[in-house]
Length: 473
Image (cartoon, rainbow, N blue to C red):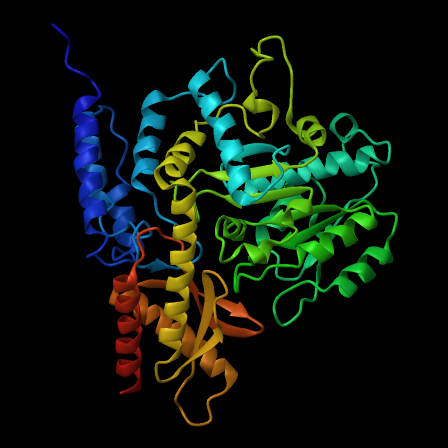
């Protein structure tokens, strides 16, 4: 007779609570309703001497976090660029935890290693990247940037006779990073982590369309023609989803000996769409690319992807050999390409998501999100007291709310915009975030969830309309 499973009670309780949460996403408030003080009081218990049953731990965890879990997995979350989780991806993520494989090498998880190989090939095809590029599955776009820029550091310094992996950066030629001034803060952090320093990053003024101009870039390249240089280009910036002109800028940068890295945290996924891939023309000419899976692919968090055209530089920057490390020359050893050793099999959820969607499903998801963003921005912008600051080209747009008080100044409109956004959050029907763009506060609209539909869009617009009516009455 088989003994009862020690895992079953806790997992069954977790399943019940998870389904209750997911089923409530269409009905419950999107924002948190529990205060910081309440959450600390509930969760900050003294750690007892005695343990408790695993299922009791799960039940109490569910009870004590009530009201402190955002509805970011649902279709009415439009703040930042946060996707949800497809059913197959979520289920595969549960299996990933149950299997508990160390996806650092084939020896530690044979199936996880092969899944990662397949995932990398599928992703390169979907994203329009060279089939010969190497790749890494990281915990997010931040570490994807670090991985790709570490490869850039290796290649640029090797050209100047410097082995950075052996000799470090002390005494090495200084590397600079040139970008349009709308680059994401994760680039600055990557520069810090790689020892380049924040002063290495130069933001150049962009055009009204948010693009880096070729003449501006060339002047910057000519300022220090002998300096090892990384040119960072945008595939969808965080405020307006702007795309640089890759077909023009990548060859220009290469003529000056620069390495071109593309920040495509969410925007690289537009290459999966026939309607939108024109925005990425020439992106395949770059040297490295970074994107997220937990944004537009809609897999659970802990999913980023780095791709590098120069496989030797990538491997030089990441790989390590030791007598105790098992290797298999017939397979791709993940630790040769990743900044981590011990790591979960994050490729499993991505593999499942891609299989659930297929090429057509990824394309439909991208197009649907773009259509929803456009409907939200134009619908909100048509309300009295609202104005469209940026009409979406993809899934990002901006709206501003004008203070109706006579003689209101720009700072009053800034405060009014923040207040309206906060009131919409308090209403519970939708969640938007704010940003400062060209010196003005805006409500940022971002649509990245596979569940967002026309009903969600209509509910969100109606929520904003109620808030504006109440504040103007």
